[in-house]
Length: 505
Ligand SMILES: [Zn+2]
Image 1 (tube, rainbow, N blue to C red):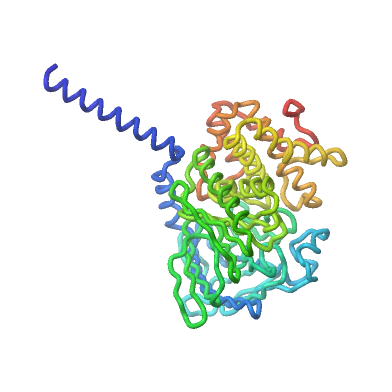
Image 2: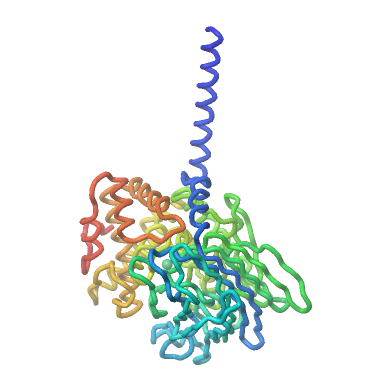
């Protein structure tokens, strides 16, 4: 062998080793690489909203006082004369507007109705007062001059909030203060213009854009704070502590405060996973931590990497079971007493970190996108971690049978409906969660499990950090399958009553 040939052989061998190693790394981490997220992240970061919020938390008065700065860029093709924010806490002003179904008010307000609200004052830009109007849960801010496409504006505002004694997303119980959907957040401007939906009492009626957050919270000594993002600094001041969090490329920011709230943490795939709990529930909290880690590990491989440094599972005074926020989920602390339900809810909320967190959607208009895919993902988790038998059992017990039970007395309408088209939680849950997951199982039966996995990975890759629509889901199916599934999918999404019996496991 001459020198040139030997050189060539060496190069080829090296190449083979490098490629094999890359495939190994990609397989280990899930093939949506950090590099891919990085390039998409750079793009989004250039123009996404930036929030800077400074909060004074006063649990004695059940109040917070805050100052919020928002940098907003006009990404629409038209001049904007006004911009809009949601003021969700105003839904808690009266029993009539409280975002709970009537039959659940007794759980939401165990000690009777308790008022909550947000009061916005001093809206300014460049030191100039801006005209603004509040109507229910919507804040309209008039621009000093029309904001041209591409232009940015920095708006500052002050606000005060009353935290109700209420066990929902925004409110407190005896152990935790839950701050979900708590600050003025920009409404989304899309192809339909501004989305100014109210705080519906069913579903998770939220729709927002990926943004950058810096939130500093001053809390009295003795309080622990769990939040979206990463704790950057903890500054001790007189009688209180300032907790500074930073979060990039998340579509919301939530936090929970609790006096003497405890935390246990552990790492999986380099991600710090924490479980927050109160009282003497450490051994149950350890289970919640394990389920959280197991779910992150499974979805990392099955769909693609969770690109954030931290993930927190927070056991809270929260009657609704579970609720997803970026990097943080709320779990009803009573679930610690029911291991299988705890694992189901933790796996479900963790799956939302992909379907809601990484790929968002208009949860008012097309709630099936995140909920049905998340329910389907939860079954995948049980199948992946414990085997096919367990997966089937979970599918029957948590999806198929509850759906059939509902169908015995009712007829489920189409899956593809907006929140306002559902009469109540029962119908919503049976149709969007259960029937939606059955529809995806049906699709799995047609295209095969590994193809549907490819579809979901494609859907993630194409829409990460953005908001996807049913159309984007159809596109993902079509591009993986190479044939047009549009009609098939829409037929299933629009069908009233049972889907085909072929699916009956
Ligand atoms: Zn969900």
